[in-house]
Amino acid sequence: MINCIRMAAVTLVFATYGVPPAWSQAYPAKAVRIVDAFPPGGGTDYAARLIASRLNEVFGQQVIVENRSGANGIIGMEGVSKAAPDGYIIAIANNSTLAINPNLYRKVPYDTLRDFAPITMIASYPYFLVVHPTVPAKSVKELIALAKANPGKLNFASAGSALALISVLFNKAAGVNMADVPYNGTGPALIDLLGGHVDVMMSSLPLAHFKTGKLRALAVTGARRSVVEPDLPTIAEAALPGFEVSGWYGLVAPRDTPKEVIARIRGDVVKVLGMDAIRTSFAKAGVEVIGNSTDEFTAQIRSEHARWGKLVKDSGIPLL
Image 1 (tube, rainbow, N blue to C red):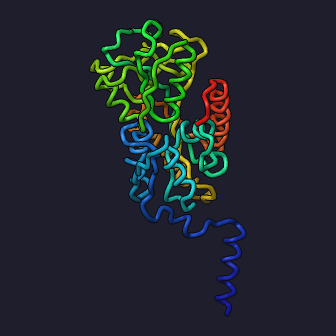
Image 2: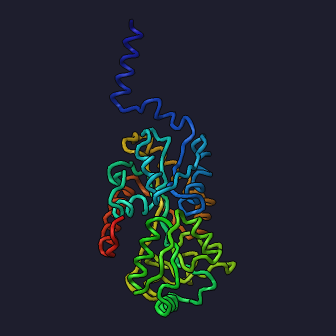
Image 3: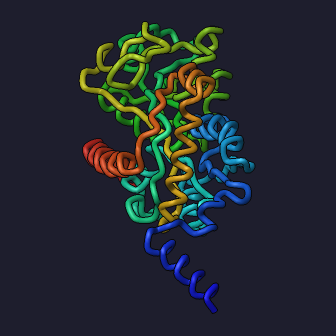
């Protein structure tokens, strides 16, 4: 009887002082899946697999990257929004899936600001304006002049809503009409660009092809020059003042995922982001590591959602 009373007292003390339940202490107890809503070969896939390659060591469990592509990332993100909120299915999201799609499509089966629990922003990056070497333009101004002199002859590969929207914004700012050629992912679009089947592209991962001459980079879309390609001007300084867009990757979980689990994932991901090999790999791709707090990422998502909403509205693009 006395032992029972003592056990009850201990249980009450634990409950009073907020000792986390055993299941949260044991997380993760099985494999964790990171859903990438785009095909293999693109920027989100690269980031997800780079993180997963070391996160499994920190977790002590297998971390699997699962590509669930379709509808510019909507299908994969919808699946995660409806997954069990236990931390075993999370998503690598970006500005397309969380900020642009909800403002570009009339109906999106998830609510960015309601259906996800932000974990941390992994990294941010500029896009590179690149052309196939057969395109006789060595600068942004030359590309614009070429497009104006040959209306409708140059085409613009786009992959996902972010690249499609950026292409439209560039056309409008430059006063040109390069035809849009849509792809279901950056990887397939980049393959066709390398093959000369399309002329121009905004891409997040073409760096390896600059050195070999397989692609020619003209500029970056960010507010400042890339640390890995400092000789490349920004589009704003090269030809179009005020033009500035950038992208980012971050991790989110289904809404109602316990805060203890979110904190565990975020803490371990930040450990991975602090590893020299990971930071070097991201830097070589022109990507800046972030690893901010959950509150900061939440505020960033809200800010990006509002910013891209204004860009879509101001661009005059009809809703899809």
